[in-house]
Length: 343
Image 1 (cartoon, rainbow, N blue to C red):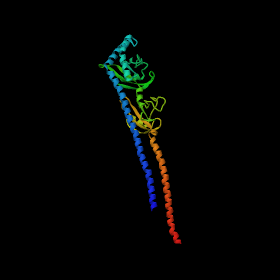
Image 2 (cartoon, helix red, strand yellow):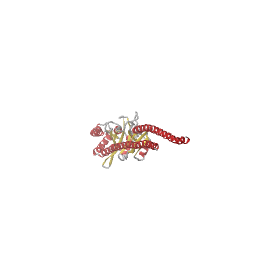
Image 3 (cartoon, rainbow, N blue to C red):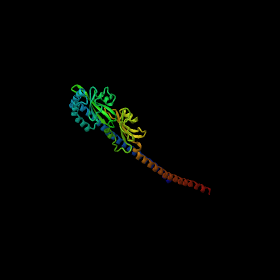
Image 4 (cartoon, one colour):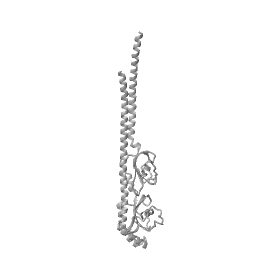
């Protein structure tokens, strides 16, 4: 009877020591996974707010500039001098010199790449830093297919945004915001600010707390990155196409988090969201490789497997030898009466 109790207790102990660690492991695994996702979601939401503020501030800047009476007066005077004398005339240059310091201040203070005045007939009548496009006609001239021409046409109606493109003159990607300029009810033209990608790039490369494989990136509605991948030695801005489960859901308007395969085909923890800006349809993603995020889990898993194997061998051996001893004793007890009967 004692042997049976010992055997039962051994089996119970084996079950206990195997089940309890794995139950604890599953709770630990969920806690680690939730912890990483919570960190990604917090990072995503903070970055989204930062990007949202940046673009809305630029939107507000151009809107305020376009309503400034000084700007309207500048348009009137520069347009009149341009059409009467041309860009190189002393009279035009004299008027330009009045507004040049103010525009240079705006460029410097806000980190713009440039500011342009475009007359309502399409003529670029002022450029703050360089003579980019100056004197050209954005309706019929050599730059009629250029991004700034598209920005001009959009901004004739309302404040607008034109997406990033590679600007060889400053060796950076730049984008445009534009707004119509009025004097009373009369349309004078369009003011355009050019913003560098470096502002956005600085936000996206602050990867503190994201380990060795974490990254934050943007994807435009055309499916191409609006940022540079940390895994590429060459720029991926407007070069790398991304079509993942996360980007598809973000473009459908969903905010979420899940384990997916990223644009490299690697399993990652992904927290994603649309940017929700009226003039930009982009997706923001914050991700980290599953292998790095779950490294501690895999380490614990390996150790648990080893411990469980050792315990199985020890307890299994103990049960086996206990059972053999019990069987041997039981057989001896059966043989003793038979031997006594024979004698």
